[in-house]
Image 1 (tube, helix red, strand yellow):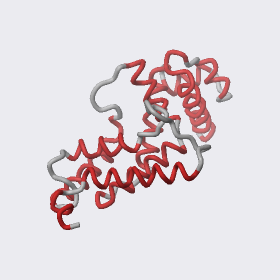
Image 2 (cartoon, helix red, strand yellow):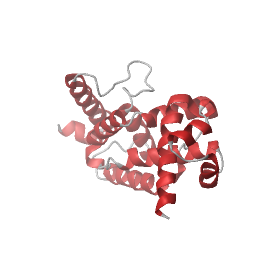
Image 3 (cartoon, rainbow, N blue to C red):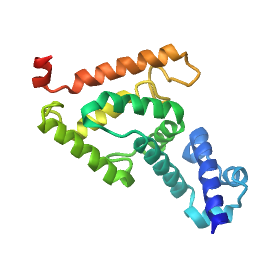
Image 4 (cartoon, rainbow, N blue to C red):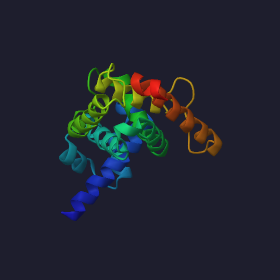
Length: 196
């Protein structure tokens, strides 16, 4: 059983690298299997086909990134900065999401496996809105979507600048500070803004 789990893990890791580099259509099962030191029969036994393998990789990385940063509705800026740092450390997720959008033209909710975690975040935001800490005029789902999008401003999918770990630390610090300030201002409750 442990060998099977190790093989599955190697296949997922090799597939993540392959899909991030070549996309869904350009990825090759032969390369994934060879890089995972597995055979194609094992890949098909675990995942069925290349599309389902992509889904497994995308869902795993999405869960990993999103759940690596706890959302505290009292501190949306820290959540945004945490997502910035998580994507900086694991840019393959953003590349996978970009490939999914290019090749599948998805609509609606992109990752359905995180329903429980998303619901907890939405509940935390709604509670903070009721308590006057986040602007109640914006739907909780929209708050979460916009905070996440703001955190991805410098991601590999950016239209303007893709940050890398090799960028000077001063640039990362400037971006983190700007992001935290922008998120804090954007979602501040009007009542709390008046009391500042």
